[in-house]
Image (cartoon, rainbow, N blue to C red; front, side, top):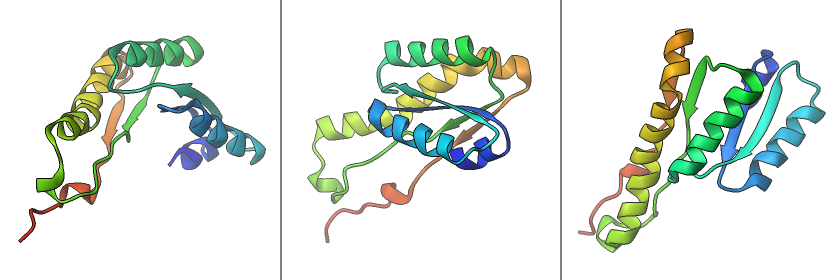
Length: 131
């Protein structure tokens, strides 16, 4: 998805808990000589301070935002009855609270620009209890 936006000339901010992960993507895209720009930012969407920093970095570099793609997420790939309460809380923080927190952080500039929000999901929620 990032490559498509950059190929179309967009200025894109990508984030991950690991700066190395997003730095690698940014390096690969810069080698591809695409017309857009990629700014890699380390940010854990479960941490309010990190989300605030992500917003600040984004708006300092590009001054506005047109599209927000919430793509952070994950799950413990185990049967539901094997997932303990701390793992469940972490999954809720990352998948639900993180999406909400990032959306809330960028709500005003998105609203000001008539922007769009894309929330990604996976099929990881299709886990079952054992029979």
